[in-house]
Length: 313
Image 1: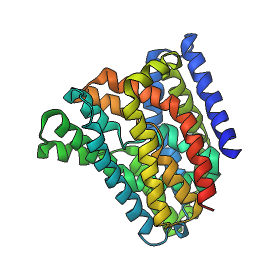
Image 2: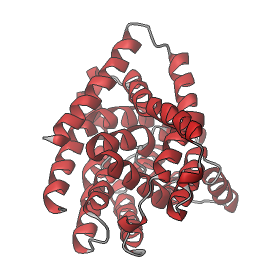
Image 3: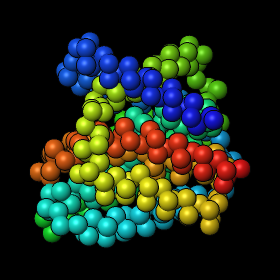
């Protein structure tokens, strides 16, 4: 029931964003400005705040990180094989490889986990992002280049690493995690924390409004017919692999294991279509896949929430 109510809240807020976009209250330029504000200020502050409350006892050694990354590697291998089964163009297969294991952890994952499990969910999601971001910001991008051109040069590798570790969201989250783990959170002045709380409170709602403004629910059925294989990989196969891994090796607290699985079931990251266009892949297909998967995952996430709640107690 808690999972249903979580998704209901998300549907309502996203629906408001969709309505505001359709009636002209939010313009295309406005959506770009909102996303820039989220990326550069609100989400970094939100991740920093979450990191300050990090409880290191959630992790049992390096077991959780090892299982999570191992499951990512297995999912990537399955994705590579799965994407090669269909007679798609190299540009479209490159999009399949790029989106297969890259979740929208910032705009969808964080609000979902925060509403679902409260602070524990936010902290667990932050930890998953800290562990997974360097991997899924580098490996899928390189593999997508191989799928598209048959090669990947060292310059691309260096560029991918530099962009990953210049990401303000990742840096802010890691800094907050470090302060929280060291127990230095209480040294932050009270007025500073109040400012952080106000800004962090703006982030999740604005992110959901931004997602809603970009959706086209009237095209969902047609999009599923076109991209069903990639949606199956991201929304079903990937979290199933993660679930099996944590069921066999349950390192970590119950909330952490639940979030580890459900975060894998989140739709592809919004920046996948930006990357696809930048690297000359099938940008139109990437935009359609990301938008429709985001809408569809609001239903599939409910299934994974209920299943993980029953398995990890």
